[in-house]
Structures are given as C-alpha cells and as structure tokens.
Image 1 (cartoon, helix red, strand yellow):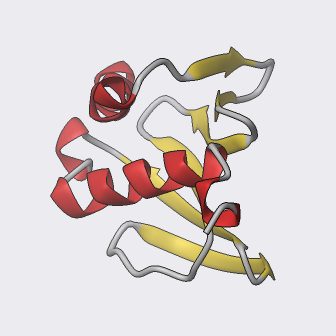
Image 2: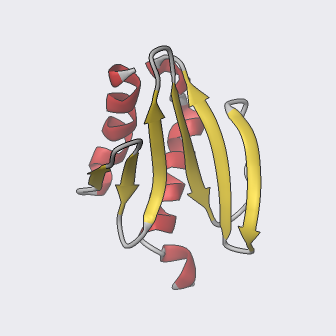
Length: 105
C-alpha cells in the first residue's frame, strides 16, 4: 500500500509542497484545507478526495455532497496502477480545492 500512496505523492509533487498530516488513524493531505485523506489497511488504501463538483471515476465507491463546492469522493486503492491518468487529474483538481482556488474565480 505504500507504493500506491507514493504514487499519489508523485502525482502531486510537480504542484509544489503538500503538507502530509499523519494522524492516528489516517493520513491527510493539506494545503489551505485538507483535500484528501487515506486510511491504510493491509490489502488496500481507503481514502477520499474533496472536489468542488461531483465527478465520476470507476474507483469512486461513494459520493457525498456537503455543499455546492464541497463534494467528498470515497475510493479504495489496491495497487499503484489504480492511480491512472484520470484519477491523477482528479488528485490535481482536489489539490486546487485544498488551495481554495475554486473560491477565487
């Protein structure tokens, strides 16, 4: 599961430093606000992204709309290859939400 998490960080690396907050039960990725969180398990990595819109991807297990610009997308990664180009683009978009770029438009 470490390799899958490392793949996530590699996707975000070109965007600049991201604060990795290791907590007791999860790892959060933070800019001005947390935009992703991961809960490691033995065989997979559960997590969620916060986007400013509802999005589709085969990995999404649940989508919860909290407000017009706060939509949680829950997923499960089982291999680093789960972080495909489409998922990587959503990670980059979530990073923008963490920077609150969607509020500046």
